[in-house]
Length: 244
Image 1 (tube, rainbow, N blue to C red):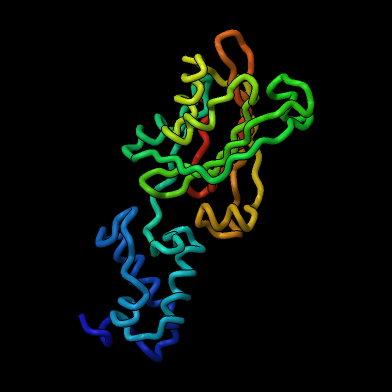
Image 2 (cartoon, one colour):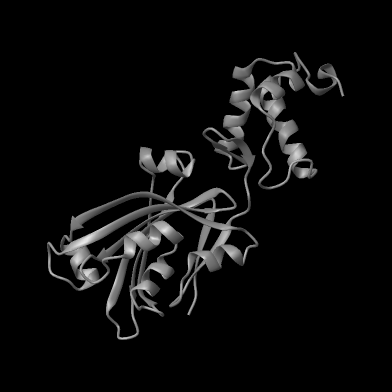
C-alpha cells in the first residue's frame, strides 16, 4: 500500500491521528501482538510519509491510552495485558510471573546499610536505629519492568543476604541461605499514588499513570519477622489479587 493510500490529507483528520489509527488497526489485526516492538520512528516516517514530530505525537497518544509503552534505549512496544499478581500467605514474585508464561528477572538497583526508623523497627520487631540492609531492585517479566521492590532486613540476623541476592537475584534463596526455608506473609497494605521522576524512569511509565504501593511483612515458621518490603507496581500492568 502506498503512502497516498495510507494517509488522507485535507479531510479534517490530523496526520498523527491517522497514524495512531493505523497502528491500532495493526494491533487489532494481530499484525502487531502484545510485547512486539513497533518499527522505529525512522521506519514509520517513511511508511506514512510524515516527519518524526508527527510520528512521535501519534506514539505519545497511543502511550497515553495505554496501547503501547516506550522504553528508553529499547524502542516502543505493544502493551501486554494486565498481569494478575496474587497476594496470599505465600506470595512469590517468580511464581506469579511464571504462571503467566513469562520469564521473571530481578535487577539490583541499590544496596545500602541504614538504621531502622520507627516504621521499619516496628515491622521487623527490632529496636529503633538497628542496622538494616536496604536492597532495591527492579523486577521484570519478559524484560518488561513490572515493579520496583525495596527490601529491609535485620543486618545482624542476615549478614549474607546481600551477597546471596547479588548471586541469585532471589530473596527466597537469600533467606534459605540463612536457614529460613519457609516464610509466610502476615501483613499486606496497599495504597496508590503517582510515581516519582525516578520511578517513572525505571519503570518506563507515564508520570500521569498511578502506582500501586504494597507494604508487606514476612515471617518465619516461629512468627518472627524476616523481611519488611515496599513494592511499587504500575497500575496499568499489574493487578493485585487478594487470596486466602
